[in-house]
Length: 279
Image 1 (cartoon, rainbow, N blue to C red):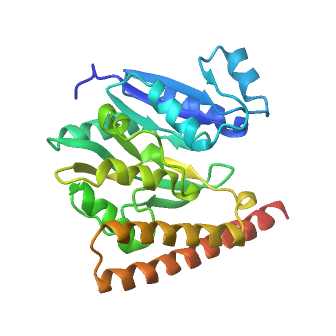
Image 2: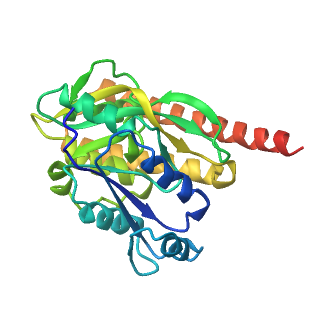
């Protein structure tokens, strides 16, 4: 493994102080030695900025009201590493994350990124689902356009949250800014911009490299409906610029609906579990 490569872990923040310490600690615990931590705040009012200053943690502050896509973009463009991964403020990386992601990429000549699985944790950090993501993908590498088409077929972002993707820096910077036109698919829209080109190769890491946090307090039936509508919006946009067979249309429509029902059931389970634990 080329330990001299600088890897930038960028954390865009906004009112995320409750979990930010854990996210930063997960970066500091990486076994890979050559890491740059980049934090860009989008106008927090919850004490995040004061805490960062008290702790002496370098960061960039953007004006209050900065849209998430702009914060993500500023964080990415501030990074100077050879490779970049973006960690949301309430998610965590496992200690071997960067080392294994980089090692996997080096095993696939020409890969512009590595994509891994992740665990799902609740507000307290308890794992509720293991090894999520990359549904339907079993090979150790995949062509970028096929990876994006898999998202269409499965009716969901099979790639996952940004911390499971390690990008070659220039491949990501060439497609900036992060596309916030479909808010809940901020990550998928940009993955498409990076990966959906002939000849692009993506390495696959079947192991979880971190955890994505969900909280029963932050989800609702309305949110699930918005996610369903926005996924269908993305699928319609994809179909306008790509050939999509009748079978793929039917498969994607069914899977999108099924994913929405699964999310409703999962969020309901979290709420019931929270009530049971507090009883």
